[in-house]
Length: 427
Ligand code: PLP
Image (cartoon, rainbow, N blue to C red; front, top):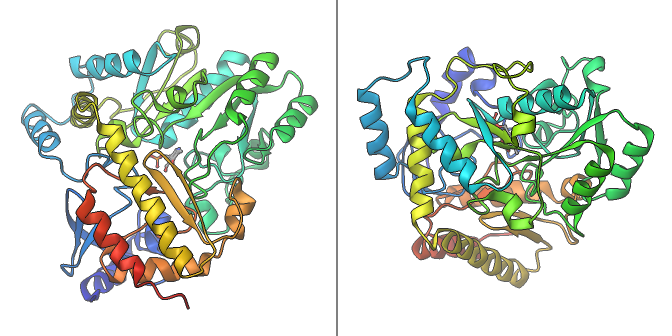
């Protein structure tokens, strides 16, 4: 494939945009090479500026669960645009989407819309601190909750890819209130509660981690976190920015049958527009301004174009009774068939999968936490990534990321993907 125009655009972009990108992982630093500039996306496919076409396994890092540019979402956005882009006043639409989410996600009474997953998690933590009157939070190594200061401590995603988990600019004062534990290591969580008695406001966790690659909770880890939070008067926050409306309409709470006190959302609920949200029971959410004292606000929060895209996306998912069955089945097929191919080539690997999230780790043993994800053969992943890219398959450009399967990926796209992987040369 030729990437001439992408190359030229990247050179130009680097003059005006730090690193040429508006979010670090897009720069391909981990996998090497020149990032591909896209100009068009429809259904399962993206087309770059050199007219190369790709089957997309990122789907905008999760939001495009229906595939790109779904005609009904497009029409809904177009119609809304004719009525105005943003008013800075309440709209009926905001209540409509809030009602749909509250009625379908377990254990929440109210939801506040923001414009990104970062804002959602940052605000949820502030609310947890305001509610409990405590300062400290527990997060897990390799989990990413956006780039707010409290979370940039051994964070996953781009922060892990760059080997720079403790970002300069995060003050020691902030960092001291973020306690770290290994994902799936309950003993470490117990130790933290023991040594910080009465000081921990909340545990925040990706109930299925997607930012160290896909890593699943094991041995009732989520249930155990629920119990220890209850025993210690701390809140349990599920960061469902990735898993919300992706694992099930009720998210990870529904799938694992564990109640969270606060839930954060992003990605799917915006249908491709910049949206985040956080939600919880009345007793907690009533502490939020203007009803309560915990401040939180946003000029574009509840933006009508974004709300319309999100609402239409959620309605389309809800009315398709076999939606989750279909995307989960497609992901399962990819998992099994890719596994067979890699076995036939004697390539040590582990595939982690939950619902329509999956990752291929080139690692001989199980991957249950960040250390194990980091031990995988990332240079082999980079090789795999580039061979697939060259053949029209677009994977996340880092071994620390999750593939997101959309409803537009059908048998034809899976067959083509497997055909390319069959030709993968292990060097
Ligand atoms: N939480 C999780 C689990 C995420 O995966 C992300 C982003 O990938 C975020 C929070 C931050 O969301 P955003 O990038 O919209 O700020």
